[in-house]
Image 1 (cartoon, rainbow, N blue to C red):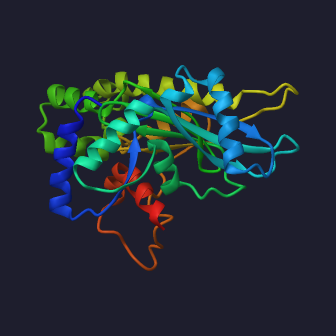
Image 2: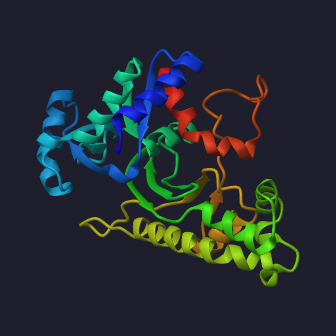
Length: 301
């Protein structure tokens, strides 16, 4: 983090405006190391953390003393190889700087976790039957990738491909006002009149093609991994698109054609409420921007 004090001051203003009494916090994937491993079944938490620490030397480029880490149980029983757990590791200095900012703002910090875990809590059920999912968080400046197994991240990655590039080029090439850019993306996008020869489609294609290339690369790597017995380890069955730039019309179909798998924009409210009982005061498109916040809020329930 660049400036702990400035963040603390900003958080203090948020507390004053919203009356925040405590916080669950998501940290950026760029700084995290995420992997899965097995531990003996019925291990105590202390035993499990000891085994995770032993594994860090081969898994992450920071010493255990300079790291903070924790795990989530993915499977209690995995065909005789023990419990499978998903491990998240952060540099201790980074975690402590965020903790200091919240302390300066006098907001009690309840938890820190990787952003993909927060999103997964909102958009997955964690059920045993749930397929392994490639989560694609298409944001303004970057795109985060995470492989989710029963709702737990077992891998994360970030690439510098974001929707801001699309917005800027559309505004310049089509002479659109900022408020009209979103309308063009959401209502026309890849399906604009004139097809691939449309000026709008032409300006979008470069960035979206780069994003699709990354989706394909991540999807097929995890889909084709095999263990020492030659068995597929993490066959990915679907792709979830979230984030503020995920609403680009035709994006889902474009990515689906590249990976040959189902591509969905998930319901971020599925673990919050039934639409039969309550309709949130935010439309579906905008809700994709708040998947992280929804997942963090669910930690308290």
